[in-house]
Structure formats: structure tokens, C-alpha cells
Image (cartoon, rainbow, N blue to C red):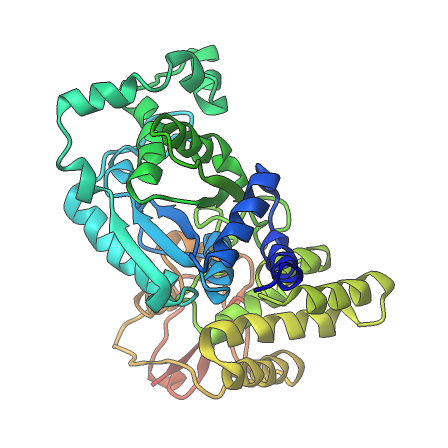
Length: 407
């Protein structure tokens, strides 16, 4: 490749890889690294770690993995680290107390489910999956002490979370100080060139550079990505806040959740969730700003794109049709789950047993908020309302998007 073609390819890849990032540190090192990779036909090794402390993944979690997929599409290698050791500590970032210790068996099961969801984004053929236990199970005390000697207590307690907990007189376990240490060591074990992480992971990601420098190898570049706002429009996407879109959500639920976001979130979701190329995002963002596209139409296009990413273009188009039929023509989706009524059941029991709500408490809240009804019938507000055989063939609706045919 001549110099002109090389420079053009570097520029092309830089434009793709810089898009959707909040920070590349150091940027000049990354550009040189990328140029060397292209010139020598040597793919970069791009690291991102998972702490499988739970088993469900939402679209906010996938932001760094979408960036990894961009690297893969450009010919580079993604390396996913399963943090089966750090998961047993729990990432202390942003936490005001120590995390509950998880067992190895629970971590392993979570990891499998987690990867099933991450592979909805990544290219399996260009992904290495590595477990921390591959190297940490062989570690002895002498090695631990050597690693500990390669950083300082002053550096570790400069971590915002550690400093805050000390200043406020809260508990800080010695094992928690090892979290960024272990994450940094991971980078040396897998020869990482780039590490991806959320903007809140800056301290931990930069530890990888520190440990690689001690090993006298080229230090990795930190590529940080934003923390996506949840459906509420004010706080980060989170399961605990119930403001998320789950990877395993049904297509109709994904579509409906996107339609529920505030209009001002659309540029953010188009940028980080719809996986648009730079030029398409810029075009849509211009239309959103100058009002040349109606917000409702823009949101429908966004919802269709997100459904299509996980379920295919046909489902993306079908969910739009169903949504419009449900919310404009006041009908129900073509395909809804059925529930066999049992004698003596009340509406709260039906909602919980059918999985329309997660608990009796949530069911009572929905009833109190006038969010439960029989389609083409009355609202239901009494948890003790009987659901007998006379309801067979009716459709129970909970909230805006949950439907159940009673049989």
C-alpha cells in the first residue's frame, strides 16, 4: 500500500472509530497504532471486560460492544474478558458499599447467558472469549505481591469512589482496591492494544496502561464511551430503575419502549442505539434539529431500526404496523400470548401468573393507576376482581404494551 492510500485508509478508519466515543487517550498514540496495524496487516487486539454479576443485558450495556463490532468489521480482533474473579469482588465504581460476594457457579451461569446476548452484536468469528481464571487460578502469593508493588496506595485511593467513601467514613475493603489492579493485569495477559469502557471506567481502563508500561510493552489506548440515558430521559439506563430496553425483550416491547422516550432523547438514541453510519446519523440529526421530520415519524423510524438490529428488517416493519394498529386503531397485536383461566382467579392472580407484572406490588400499582383494562371494555381497579369463564375470549391489557388473551 503506497503512502497516499495508507493515509486515506487511516483517515477512513479513524472517522468510523472516533464516532460515538467520548474520549480516546492518548489520541495521537491511537492514530499511530492504527497506521502501524494497517501498514503491517496486523489486527489490533481490542479488549472489553464483562463482570457477569447478573444475567440480563440492556442496550446501554451494548454500547462498547457495538464499538468492538466496528473494529471487527474493519478487520481487527475483539477480546472479551469474562471477569469471573472481578465479579466476585464487584466493581466498586460509583458504589457506596461493598458488593455481595457471588459464587463461582452463579458467575459461570451468568457469563453464558451474558455472552448469548453480547453475540447479538459481535462477530463470533472475530471474537476471543477469555476468562480471568485462566491466569488468576495459577497465581501464587509471590506474584500477587509483585503486582501490588507496581502501583501505590496513593494512586488507588485517588479513585473517585474510593476517595469519596474514605472521606465519608464508609467501609472500604482491601479486596476492593484490587479491582482496578486485576483489570489492569488482564490487559498484560491478553496483549491488549485498545480497551473499551464506559466513561465511568476511566480509572480502571488506564490501569491497564500502567501495568503494560511496567512490562515494557506498548501500552494500550483507552477508548471511552458514554453512559446512555434511560427511557425516563433523566437517569442512566438501568434495570433497577426500570428505564431500560432489554436485549431479550420481545420485538413489540422494544418498539413500544422506544416510542415512550422523550423527544429530546432521539439524537442520543439515534447516535448510540440505532447503529447508523456517520453520514446517516448526521443527516437524521440535521432533520431533527431543523424540524424537517416530524418527531413522531422520527421515533417510529428509530424504533423500527432498533427492532431490526435484533430481529431483522421484516420484524422492524411488522412491529411498526402492529404499533400503529394498536395505538391508532385501538386494536391488539396479531400475536399475543394466551392464558388458561382457572376457577376462582382474580385479576391480580392472572397478571402475576401470566408474567404481565413482576410482583403483586407492581400489579396493585398498575391497577391503582387505571392501567389495567379489558380491550373494548372497562378499566379494572380492584385487585380482587374475579376473572371467571365469562371473560374467555377477552383480551386483558396492562399498561400500554402488554396484552393477554384469556382462554
